[in-house]
Length: 445
Ligand code: SAH
Image (cartoon, rainbow, N blue to C red):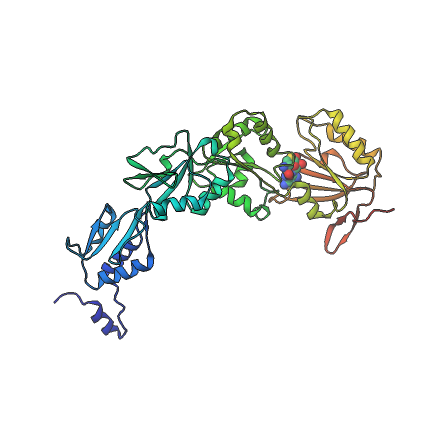
């Protein structure tokens, strides 16, 4: 006696058998889900086709379908049913068409309908189109990118728009179609347009990072930035390349980013807070403007904003920046101290609330004290001051004090200093020390 079949097992369990034989499963996966590089012509027809097979009909295979060898199909040379591997758009009722993605439109126009017509006129299925291959000079052509997106195929670029595998070329409606004998490995064809995205991570906590930034980080092949921020932007997959560098090498880092992106890679440069506020975005643009390398200018460049430290700190304290304010970096690494003093003087005179970035560091020990001297010439000791340290990070600390009490010792390089204007106020917050700080929207006449 053999093993019990599904009918006997179902009877013993007193249930209805749902019979899906391994053969059926195998037919489904192999016939209806061809491997990458091949596309099923028509899923509905595919289902009918598989039921005919399961109904006991034989089948023959025309064309090259190595993955079907494992399917143990009921093959017969004289079968009525056939599986045909072909770029042909039209099949007949007895055949299942599976299209190899083996057609490449060479140097195509930025017109999806025209490309579709040229395929149709040549009797080629749109599913057989593997990609568009264009000259590098056209890399920044937005219309061409839209065309590829409309057609749902990748757009690749190379100096010479020819295929590097066995193929024939036919002209259809003025468009050159290269038809390879095998599915085309598009990764071997030129390169995609590279992408450089400059992102701001926000102050630290992941929930304050914009979804668009998270997506860019996920899609990145290379991530560049100051080590602390690269770590903050993680975790990354093993296939993502991290390029940590010293915080001061901004222009060198920007050039490196363009070199990678110009080779077709998806590159992300990270900053904390907002990338346009005393951070990488300006350095990246400076590097680009100074470059005569057309490949750099062809890179898809995007800058994605983040929550800047002053805004994150202000929100913690209430709304000290609720009226006009100014952001100023106290670092005299990149600008003369005299300029900083002049700006502080005018901003204080203008009664703007002040947000100090880079207020102090070991290399710049005296600057904050000097800045406070300038501010105190015009502003009262009672002026409300907010200090945000490591805002949005585990060690977050918020201090509300006054200009009279503020000393440089209360501040380090991880602190945001907000000095209120004459109208900035505070009031007690139930159950907490610091209270709410805000600057009213309206200004006394
Ligand atoms: N691009 C950043 C600023 C870079 S300058 C942004 O938009 O926030 C670096 C300075 O920002 C630091 O010296 C500090 O003054 C401030 N800073 C950055 N992150 C901070 C944080 N999480 N909490 C408080 N201050 C921060």
